[in-house]
Length: 246
Ligand code: FPP
Image 1 (cartoon, rainbow, N blue to C red):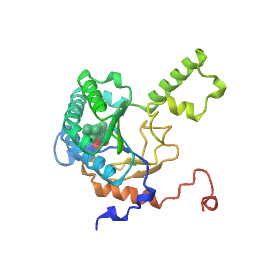
Image 2: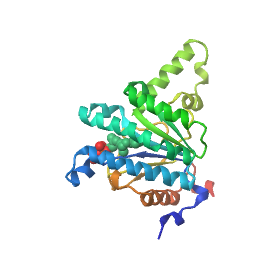
Image 3: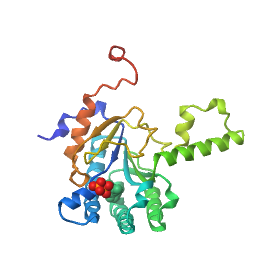
Image 4: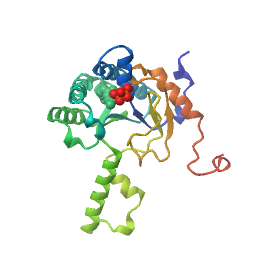
């Protein structure tokens, strides 16, 4: 049976974030180079984007490249950057056809010129789309994002644009890379690892965490549906009691 039918459309997570992990192990299992794992991972990206758009999820954020990933072997970094450029080129039509807006978060200035220009071309092309926002976290690290936020706010305090007494959650939200996005409702990590790895630390304060042993290149629409069904079984109390909620 298609698990899609078990999903309650009225209580969908508004923002799903995914730590796409296990490409390297998937490739190793097949006796292939790590690059093939990443290449096959792009198929799961496509499936996940399509499934979220079809269901009506408003925001999908994918951890595509972390600040720490720059420390990987040069050839692997190069492969990942090439894959990004080719995926952006190949998928711009899919984004347009499905009314999906692309955005990006991270220290984007550190991306190679070719990636940066292709990325911003697609961001520009899709900026009026309204069905779903797909955000790629690229050269992203949550601690770096928080440092950047603190610097921006301190500058504004120094220049009397913000008073330090007025700093609250909304001011911090407005200065994070994710300033236009809602908090994360559901965080999925594939490959059996159960950690956050410097991803959206502020934004996942009340997210439901879902870990699956499926390796990212094997992740399909059905796996996404499973995660959403599990999410819908959870009681999100936001610090309140069950009685208060009912
Ligand atoms: C983690 O697997 C995956 C990455 C670091 C990169 C994810 C990139 C893609 C899926 C391809 C391109 C993305 C887009 C958005 C088009 P890993 O290499 O850490 O796997 P391992 O833990 O098994 O070694």
